[in-house]
Image (tube, rainbow, N blue to C red; front, side, top):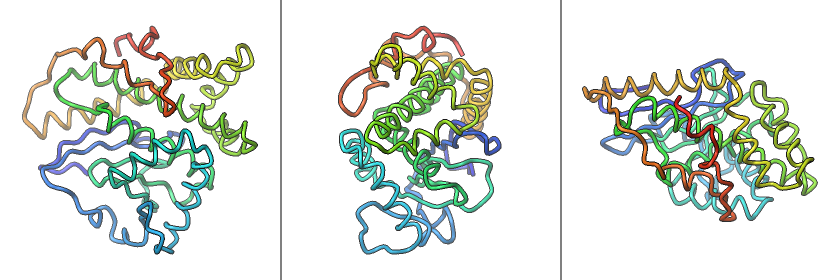
Length: 280
């Protein structure tokens, strides 16, 4: 997927389906036509607001986005960013080992066709938070060292998982528990939801709970190993494509200050955690 004219970084997983999803960042000299993503993209992709579309993808994503928008406060910012940036929501039917992905080159969020409805909701929610992160400047670059980009990868993934858990918890409190129960079925990630739930039982403080969920992400050697592998593969591909040498620059000390700002404006303070400061 990485051509000579494309600077690419692969975040998350080129690993089997037990992984959560694949996260593709691409920067290209020219805009890339969505038709290059899939020969059937016209019927497999839906753009929010296209009310005339009535194919399978349109029906599916209208239902998914309608479900997410039941939390009006938290979904508004996510959807505003998606619409402003022209994100297309697509159904993926090709085998690539992931449940879904955000491809920055084609500006799409894709979900695996074979997944259940609430699994698809979880992936779309996950990737919408990534889209928001990218638009706030949290994206891969060769300006900093590979270790620092790995550290950023860990942080953005920890935030996305923690955010998804908080969102699902809020839905559960609204009498819509299906997304929450679905997160508890994801192998290698259920511990994050459980950590959130345990902190809520102790303190009934959602800011403490989401911060604990963020910290919990780092507790898995499996997650860190796989995400580091994916990040480093992408970073090295970028170096190869550009014929540049690795930078040894460190991220600015305030780089993560705004990473964990929630749609309601609250910042749960992940930048102050010890885990985010650790070398990868």
